Image (spheres, rainbow, N blue to C red):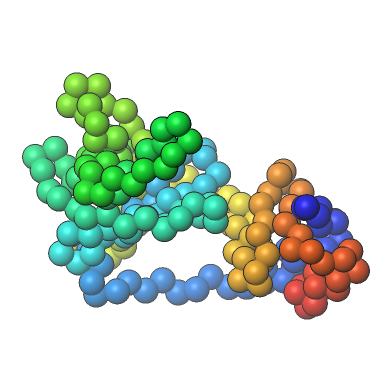
Amino acid sequence: MKTLIKSALLLLLFMTLIGCGNDEKTYDEDISMKLTCKLNPNAMYEDRITFSGDMTNATLVSTNKQSPIVSYKVKKSADGLILNGTQTRYKDGNKTLIPDVDLFILTEGKSDYWNWDLYYFIRFETDPVRYLTCHETYNATKKDKVEKNEKPKVDIAKKNRDKIVSSLANQGFKSYWGQDSSLWIENPGNSKSELERFGYNFAM
């Protein structure tokens, strides 16, 4: 059962989270590169790929809380960086995990901002299909954080929505946005009054 949080509660949540400052970004010494990726530039969710210092491993974390964290082994090739991991296959309702499969290949893009493209590895040489488009947010070989000329306008409302979902997740509640003004939270079994009390306490 899912409960729609009312406008007054949403306003309180927004006021609380908008007032939070951005955390200062720091980077581990064992990180060589960070990418922020999307299915397309206008997609709601982002996938953030972090590469180890020796470029042999990578981790993908999505802003979609329903998506698991995924780890890959990284191999260099003439065309780019190959991401090797576990492939999931379904047949006749049965799930099979196949380890050590070349899943994706990361190549340099043509845009000044979306400067990396992640393709499915299968049939890449004959019929390439792009999975994600990415931009570089950190590169250890460069002195400073990469600056791009075509940086898109920051969606403040989206950042605030993501903060709300993340904060609720930290309190043990699964949630998602149905519309810009409608937040749905999965009810673990609490009564209406308990949910309202939690909402007001959470916002204070």
